[in-house]
Image (cartoon, rainbow, N blue to C red; front, side, top):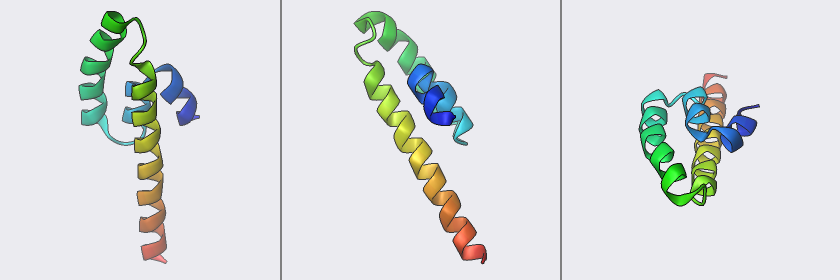
Length: 68
């Protein structure tokens, strides 16, 4: 579900991935970039959000593996 948010609202997806400060920072960069470029930079933010989601899942898997 978080990947759907990454397509529509990348900053919100980053917040849901457990990185609230980075999500707010990306929001303040994402919003003007969308208006000034007409949406051409949106795929860059989608890729950023997907990378952060993937990295947070990998971190969670590593933590779970260490606890076993």
